[in-house]
Image (cartoon, rainbow, N blue to C red; front, side):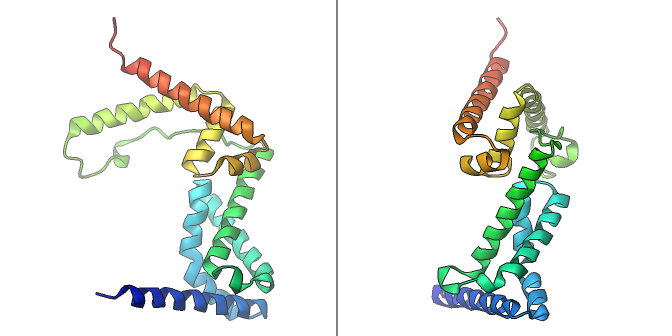
Length: 203
């Protein structure tokens, strides 16, 4: 088993290698750029996907992120942070900008859940009754979410499915942060009340 010092050194070596590649890219080294892409693309792709939640958009975000990385490589200063963290910030920023463009262009950004099908349930579910109950609860949640106001659906989607902070949601939608917090609070309250009413036994 590797010691923590060995693991730490390996991580530090990886960070140093990425930093060296960024510096080479700053000098116009295209091979260094290809190497950096190969080493970081999977991590950055999932960073983008976590925000935008759609594979095709995440792929576009990734391309924009690497263009930005190439352009800003001369500005990278290793003393201010490791290369991977620097690239992650760039990718997350491009992802948020992508969502902002969708909002601005009035494209579909409504909070939506796909109706679950049998393939979405765990294949090793030991209790078919429990699986059916979970499926019904998910379908019920879909219906209740669909009854929320559009602003509440959008805020909850960005905050919970895209894992954004209130500030990031405000930046993405152009809404005041106070309004974002209010929409999130009221949306969750409405969902909770709807689920409580549904669960209550009939008189």
